[in-house]
Image (tube, rainbow, N blue to C red; front, side, top):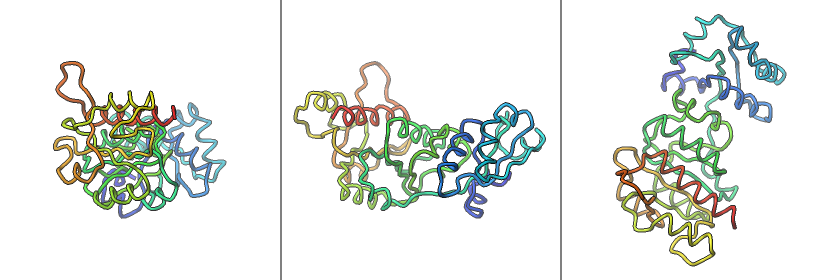
Length: 268
């Protein structure tokens, strides 16, 4: 169990850990919805099993093997300082990009070489909240099953398809062929997101139509998007800074961009 906090063991066993009542609740709900198993085993302290009886009961009713363990045993399974009493073992299942594209997605988050697990998890959570159809991580990005990334998704990891390990150029090309405009989010972009949102609100013409199917491309936390990423995109868009902040971090910019598209698409 403890070894699954490491990427090599997760890859070798094809399993990862979901810790805490929120993540475990969403994993059990996804498992119950079937048909593929989402939770393989559930470990709980006696106190957590009583406090979160509905989660534990639902898991057992849907064929999950539930173990009651001592607090020190559960603490040894995880890498958190203060474990919350519930740990689920889940298969590291991902989705193929072609399967996502076959569903004709309208909103996708594409992460290129994003390395911080907290950032990746927060973007995935924001994409879920905005109603996105999928999250795609290119090769060189963080392992989405990293314990910190899983915690940062707050259960959203179990809500929408996640594609991993694809080359950026191939992902952009395939998304474009599927009808998605690929918009690169970059502080130096020539197009202003506020202007695009205003145009979408009144149905005016604009270089980019936010009401159309869109894949937002976000780059590395430190280096941003490279020239190839910006060149491959259909347009480069900046989030305007109306105050004195020098920039927005990756996760915040992703929230703003995804919600701009979600609002425009819902209005349409």
